[in-house]
Image (cartoon, rainbow, N blue to C red):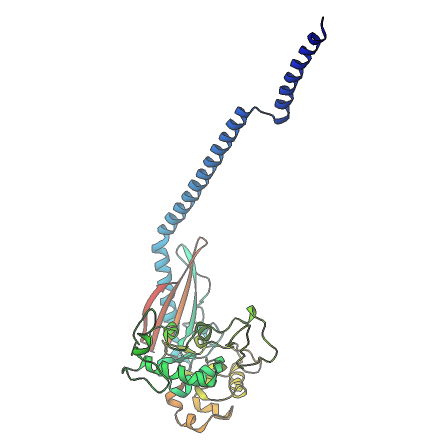
Length: 377
């Protein structure tokens, strides 16, 4: 046998071995690999479709379950509003004032036989439960009745520069008044029509406090207050100081929405108003406003407890804090110890599903307590 004859079979054996080794190393031939990839893609697509179908079924089931409870939510929400009306009506015969330690505000006082067993929390009725929260609107100043001095004072308490506060105050008054004649630093329709997009001055009272952000000079941070947790506040910024630097810009340490409302009557209830609102209305400093709040809080210094000492009449404040004489002479116009309009929140829970109904309730007397409107939050 020739040398070449010995080499030929060896070459063939190596080629065959190479093919076998290739197949063993990859686990599949090129054709079978392509088939495997196609199968995996099909499985992936089917899994995505199945997941989407499962999510759609879950959403439809939730919607169907919610729809089945719509009527129950409605009646439980309205029941909560009626309970609030009852409590507010019963409050008047007992005490000649409204305060934070009374039943309607979640306090322990102001209960008679009719209210002794009434609860505003975890009220069980029909298929679910509800709880009622009542806030009086007179704890804030109605911006539609605020004069120039109180508007400017509120802006400065929020941290607005004094010069800028005068301009914004004029613009707010121009927005509310019925004419189209701008004040010295104000703005009327001719200014707003030059903006993009253009719009006209309302020339009427604000219906919702968020309308303030349509008025010249008012920025969202004035309305909501600066979120100090998101910035590095300089050590020099204290109280209501205005700080401007290249990193943060103006810092508004109080919010206009914490001072003003559009749903109250003219007078502010001194038994429920915050120190910030009292400063705005009375024109007193921080110490005087805090003295009023601490007096009505009683010995424990905490409002909404049994030892609270609510004011029976606005004139009592004169013995607690130095109030300017012009304010004392007009106490009946700006201050009161009763509230008239209340915001009622009814949180309904049916099988773990929760919704909140909000109602605005007006109380003229014990026989006239009306729900002005309701909506779901």
